[in-house]
Length: 75
Image 1: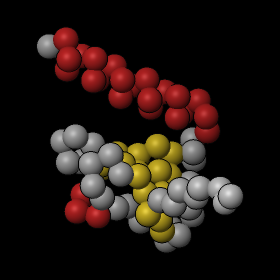
Image 2 (image 1 turned 120 degrees about the vertical axis):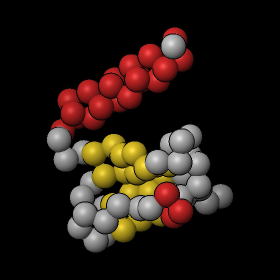
Image 3 (image 1 turned 135 degrees about the vertical axis):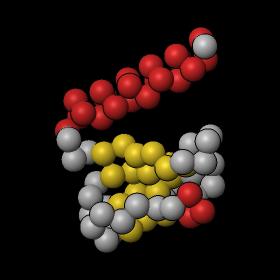
Image 4 (image 1 turned 90 degrees about the vertical axis):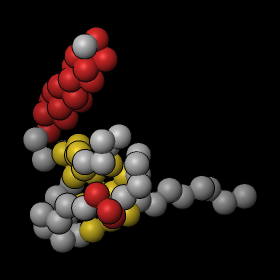
């Protein structure tokens, strides 16, 4: 039995960011040169997770995005 392989849309071009028309909602792309993952949000914009700032920066970014979502949900 072969192992399943998940492949993301990707680029190795420095600074390249996918455009909204490049991704479906929830789809993930990766720039393996910059170490950044991108995804298309519910509002049609592109957001990212970056390894460039280290793990603490990624955790802070996730916390900030969750706080924004919670604030919107609570009105």
